[in-house]
Image 1 (cartoon, rainbow, N blue to C red):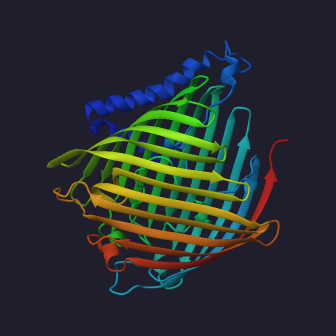
Image 2 (cartoon, rainbow, N blue to C red):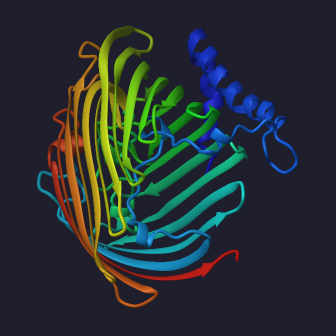
Image 3 (cartoon, one colour):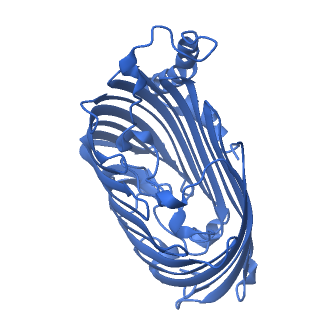
Amino acid sequence: MLSRTLSFNHAIPSLSHNSVMLLRTCILIVLVLPLRLWSQVDGDGAETGNDPQMQSRMLIPPPVNGQAYPTIPDSRVRSNYLETGLTFSSAYSDNVLAGSASTPISDTSYSIWPTIALDETMPRLHSVLTYSPGFTFYQRTSARNEMDQNAAADFEYRLSPHVTASLRDSLQKTSSVFNQPDLTSAGFVYGSPQSATVAVIAPLAGQLNNKLNVELTYQFSASDMVGASGMLTDLHYSDPAEVVGLYDSSSRGGSFFYTRRLSARHYLGTSYEYSRIMAYPTGGQSQTETHTLLAFYSFYVKPSLSFSLAGGPQRANSSEFPLFTFGSWSPALAASIGWEGQHTTFAAGFSRMITGGGGLVGAFHSNTANVSARWLLARTWSIGSTASYAMYDTFTPFLAFAEPGGHTAFGTASLQHQLSEHLDLELGYTRLHQDYSAISAISRNPDANREFFSISYQFNRPLGR
């Protein structure tokens, strides 16, 4: 699962000297700081010279924690379990081959997903592993039959009472980004500006998405915390003929942050992030480097409800090898809210930044808004919904491979019903609209409607005491 992310090591030689030094510094902090702090911990895991005020662990504010807001209500959250299951799903789409014909082509698909998940909590380590291979068959366009892969790993390890390391890796190999066992459970609302992993949605195209994030945090006083993180993403289309106008892309980056807890409810801080985003059009290569300095503020109305704001300057340099380079400053902004209740979750986020990749060539002023919600109507009934809007305006209109941009809007709503202790039923609808005049895979037929249902059998076994 991590094989594609390891290509980061081969990307370093092509970076500028300053970028290499920055990334090396990130790596040194992540690797050396835990060893330094480990020496301050005795055999029972207690720090020497403990300050009683330090017993209160700080939260990592949404603008810098690298995690999506929760999508499962408190009453449905479980831990320490082994889960196995099987999901059967069928979906009807009125536009499965966008761009390949003058009129939309509709089709019905059938999918089967075996699933295994492990959630284990130990005194220092919390790990969550999920694997769900899928087999998808199309009734009319059988040439696009696909074996899907969905895998995720999430580790959080407390090196000492005040030092925590985390690693999150997710991989998805699919013929459609909507082809998942439970689309409305896929958290995608973040508290920080995010580089696009997928900017343009190809309704039916083989693709591989991989995202890795590592983070180290250190609470060095009762109200102060620092952290460092590294991030890698890859997007690969298996058949370029299916996505004419879209191209493979990848990104590498690192960040530092400092935050201070002003009171139990108020956090203030600053962060710096570097990213290098590559796109690979036919016969060329596009590169965008960004440097972003943000000040952020988070207000926890209560532990389950928070508001966050972040803003600051962003410097972007975009180039096409071996000819042109263009650079400029722009403001970066982010705002978000997250609520995790006993029967309801709600999250909404907005960000404005310069980004690249996600299937597009060049750099873009991006404005994105995402909303996710789930309501537990009764003990066996719940409703889930997600919606997203993204607008991309070219940052580099004079570069040869640059695209003018466009916008994407989609939403999904679903109804879930628990038929028995182990059996669940879901019905849902997805609407997709896109406007990208320069991308032939989208411009001919920019809209898609998808109706789906699934039935799942799951068996859970508690772990530990």
